Length: 334
Image (cartoon, rainbow, N blue to C red; front, side, top):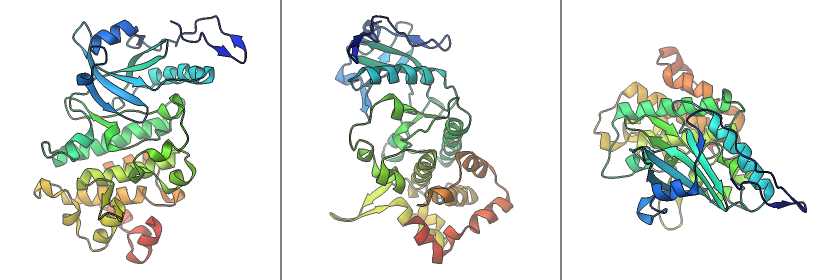
């Protein structure tokens, strides 16, 4: 593999440096294999395009389906080294609700990551499509399993990982509609261009990330709060009111919480088929996560615990938070 034969600081690296194999399912693919699997990265195979590159559907000779992320070109030896280090990390992170990589390809200018294909695509395609509708049970399962995956990255992965791009399009769904979080770790894997962070969907970004461009675990919590509200309302993070005005999802939800009009918050396409206490709990947790002050947000481990705890005591605790007092709430979220 011609992975590091480039000039750096005037010296040529003659050795071939391979990414360490982390477990049997993790391997190096050849360009020829992935060209064949994706029909030469045919446009008809393209599943989408994101922050770090394009994704293509493919099929290996054994019949297994894959998704191949074709990353944007690296431009320096330092970025090549970062790629090698981060691919090692991606290969070693395993959780049932993270979309783990099956392997990689790094030859010439090509930098590709190979994943298992998720047949039910992303959460976006089900929340914002007239052709598909997730029932309440599936939505709650997605909320919990997504939270568990991000909590694993923050608190249990080695090393700890900040996702940096939590949003509905990065929540993929397997054949059983189980959540699989993808694109974790790419903030390090791919170099940021000037202003690249701010070109993401602003509706998910915490105020401090918008201001500084720096990603953090607390920023992930904010983004997850927006995701929770999107999941239960079926609305996008930012709604355009007219040609000049936009409204964030928290700005729309909070006044309805003050008036306890949860029935107006929930996705109306569910036709009343939801669990009242679960709706209330998820909405309150989502708003807690999306507070403007980072120090007031819970950790992802705390979010998981709150989502899974159905006790009256926990609900009373949530309702007593100053955020949900009309006098204080607007200031906390602004």
